[in-house]
Image (cartoon, rainbow, N blue to C red; front, side, top):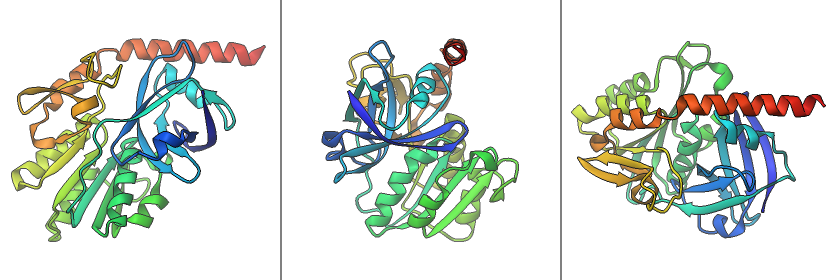
Length: 281
């Protein structure tokens, strides 16, 4: 069992938790992930590590409430326990030697992009960050990005906060202003990452994306997290989650990621109703 050391609500659907897991905290690096179960009957879900505190022995996770498991996890409070918390898994993001980087986070992807931007800043690199959201009510981690970015652009689709537009609009502005990047690191919805690559590929700006497909065991044995990268099958849990954006088949990944969408919606609604009944008693 793993204790929840702290909990913070970032917006109506995004929650940050620090989990007591000293062995994982001691080894965790940006880009790696954990797999957790809320209870003994729960499903296994992957969450990218959003930070760690070695002295306190805690690992930070940030998740969006989109299904049954994240709904159950969101109902937990500081002092409660979760069943399993396994990691770190995957390959850390390769940052060595980078001098100037544009880090892009879209929606919940900002939580994954944040520790990468923080590490690059710590290493002395010039960090330009772009974070994008649908509207002002969904903006998260702005202060954290400000602290580690030489330039920060906050974008909203409806223009209700920051600049009006999407992350590609912001990237285009920065590139056309004369900025030359060793690498662009884009993390967020598949459609967002696809369009970032559609912009950077003709300009030959190296672009790394973080893929989060359906995942079960996290060891490469089940094959659930397979992707097509450069015409070859890769497994996100052991070969990634970072991949060369120029080579990822985004359309295939998007189609596979939506296979269980209706079932997930049904389970989410079922779980919400169950909790509502319990709270009404």
